[in-house]
Length: 298
Ligand SMILES: NC(=O)c1ccc[n+]([C@@H]2O[C@H](COP(=O)([O-])OP(=O)(O)OC[C@H]3O[C@@H](n4cnc5c(N)ncnc54)[C@H](OP(=O)(O)O)[C@@H]3O)[C@@H](O)[C@H]2O)c1
Image 1 (spheres, rainbow, N blue to C red):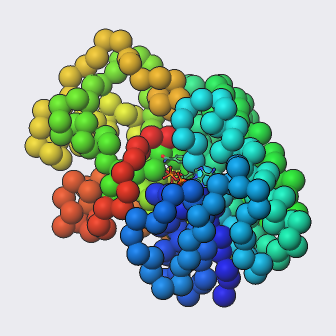
Image 2: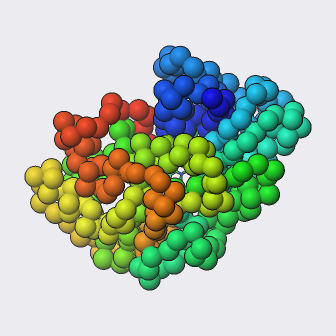
């Protein structure tokens, strides 16, 4: 059994941690704030700041690491701190203390793909920093590739799930708007599948250096809004002439393939938005209890 460190005990990290604990692994989570709920057996939480704490109180028998730290704000400084500096500080501490890490999984994002013509992209497609967010993640992926363990940069699509129902809430409240330009394709993944896929990668005998974590069906944002409205028994959301979505929130116009994840033997529990969103709209379809609040954007 492994001892997993989850740096960034947030929406995704804490769910991955709970799955690992359920599978019998020891789990140590790390974040700056106190735990707000009591933790299940097998899980301990370190309250530490990866950036400012002089020494990180790391257990000396960590074998697996998931780095799922998120930036506090959408600024170049906050992104550099969360994705590059925090990552380097943790890696340095693990190396200096000679902690016997075997596997390291860094949660990156599909935002590193710059393509805008609706094409399919996979792990071999070119990446580039269209804005500081993706540029910083690409830099962090390069740091990860140089670490002395079996590493994977897991490029995660927009996470939705219990407690992350922003798009459904926007439709329900009448705030959602369809946008004419640009065309927006969402590459989504349910929280359960994102966490399950991270664990699948940690367990895999030959983890790839890069792996996309998305579901099987990228979806046009307007189509998704209309589909959600229909499920809620509401009319299609109105059109907005000028988009107010910022570029990073827009995501882009490309379809991110999860073929590699499937070839590695992973089976999605929520293969498309239809199953995943329907379970959130109508909880009798199998959604879990809410976890934490947040966004569901790529
Ligand atoms: N959400 C999405 O749709 C999405 C899509 C693609 C990729 N991702 C990536 O997936 C990762 C996890 O996302 P998430 O939605 O689970 O984020 P989240 O809920 O915001 O969790 C991030 C965690 O990092 C902790 N953290 C932040 N700064 C820290 C520091 N200096 N030291 C220690 N802990 C720190 C936060 O806790 P404290 O504030 O208590 O420290 C929080 O628990 C992020 O890297 C995100 O960029 C997310």
